[in-house]
Image 1 (tube, rainbow, N blue to C red):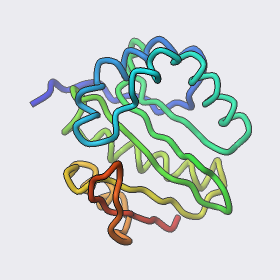
Image 2: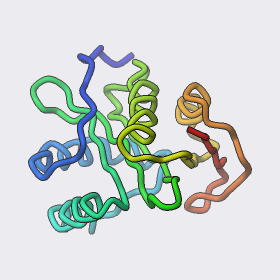
Image 3: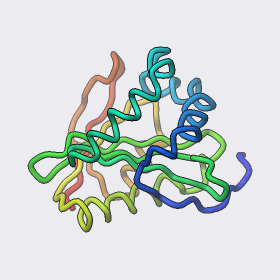
Image 4: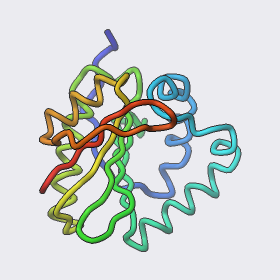
Length: 165
């Protein structure tokens, strides 16, 4: 079982998160690739440009990117609301391997749902996960998402979820 970590703070992504965000993505790349599509080598080579593009999307209000930041600045997770339109958005999230099994994803998804309503004025969220990711299914179910049908993600069977806020 992973060692307990202090309760991280959910923060809106900023440019100064770059070094820790890159370290988080690199350290957990293989872990994430086991259940979600790999970001690919180009993502890491062009990380600074990609981050700048994400921050521009966030400034335009079409996406909201959040990071779970532990004491000392280490990033332990990401919670993203993307494709914001017509009162809804797609929720995506990932938590560092060393921080799994501690309820961090559930707590952070609930916090992002509160932000979706209170700060961003959203009325619904969508999410999806592959069938071989039971942890993600559990998080979505615990946070009130309802299964809405079968899908294929990166060639793998999955489930689409929805949540009315």
